[in-house]
Image (tube, rainbow, N blue to C red; front, side, top):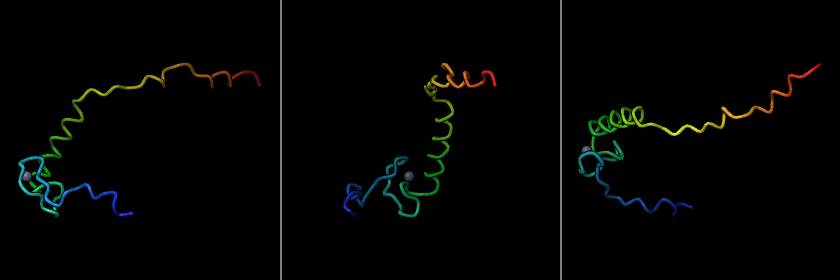
Length: 69
Ligand SMILES: [Zn+2]
């Protein structure tokens, strides 16, 4: 069952600077690049507008439960 993840090549390149990846800082080449990506990722996440499903604001069938008792 360990043939599933065989797609990943041994020699990857850092997504930040393109250098060979260091297994210790996978998938980056160094801690610096890992930190860089983390900061980039964090700031990106909070600025990217996400599509919120408005399902929760729909009708609430549970309201009928508060009937007479
Ligand atoms: Zn790098």
